Length: 386
Ligand code: SAM
Ligand code: SF4
Ligand code: SF4
Image (cartoon, rainbow, N blue to C red):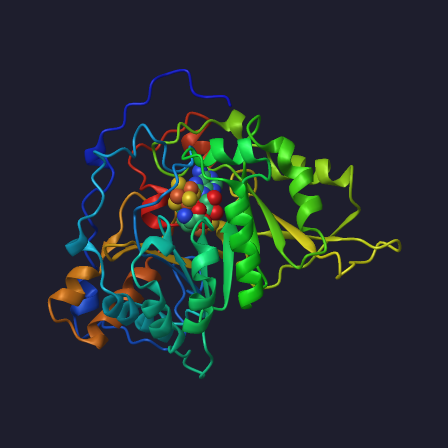
């Protein structure tokens, strides 16, 4: 594994800078906004997708996300009282759904570490869009607890899971999770999720050049024809602790070129607006998509920005609303929940925050961050979720 040559110094005080305050206009009756099932930001992007981080803790120490030397026993994780309760999360989610959110993804940290997560899933599964449809409710997990929990998650109303898996070789996997966790247990978890009906299952593989790129073909062979959708993710410069360098990124174009040496692939249309992955299907002998063989995806957050239709809002474990994965500050919604604000005020706050949104970090990355891994004030992926 190639590592940065300079030692990492990360002032912990910078990890969670002060929250942004909700714009005053949200509280003024003259400019209050109601939830009308559709709200667009300053660049015309509609709010459709919400990611909720339910814990900032994790039992893995993936070097690209929670490097051991930073996330050690002295790391200042959020105290329990800071966490939103399930009722608070559901209340915020209900407001977002009223503004047009159709899809909710639970994430973390490792979301299955949050005690009684099934209860939250039940509450979210009961929400309905303004036109009466259930939400697309999903969860991203490292899979370590999935074999034990898959059935209960399904019974609570979870529809699908995405499992992160960076390789099939046990030694590679143990070294990437950095807690010596065996790959066989994650594969058991994936199997249990499939048996519980939590599909179509997606697998996220973060590709780090020189670390696990030799696992790409093996992963594709393993999941081809199983109904599982494997997605290759470019290693991103999220947070400030992973020592990111452009040299460690294997561009998606190279991933596809590598796969095309072994498989015949055909480009597929995006299945939903704002979809992060570019889809490729395995082709049959006539060059058409062979649905029984399935598809793969590439998520090119570094080499091909997809900010133009980014419809995702992110809620941190302590109730801050982030408008971009690379934001340095989030809006404090928890104070509104805890100071007795009514639903109309909460809806106005969310409406005003989203309609003022201009974020497009990935589009501007080239100019801002170059390949230095700069951006020391950005929040960590484990805090805000993927
Ligand atoms: N612990 C869960 C998991 O690993 O699936 C959920 C949280 S994790 C932060 C969400 C996703 O972010 C995972 O698929 C992970 O691989 C991805 N991720 C974390 N750090 C990343 C990075 N630096 N670049 C690209 N993806 C990253
Ligand atoms: Fe934990 Fe997921 Fe981050 Fe890995 S990617 S350290 S499993 S939160
Ligand atoms: Fe969305 Fe920010 Fe990612 Fe652009 S960089 S796609 S705005 S989360």
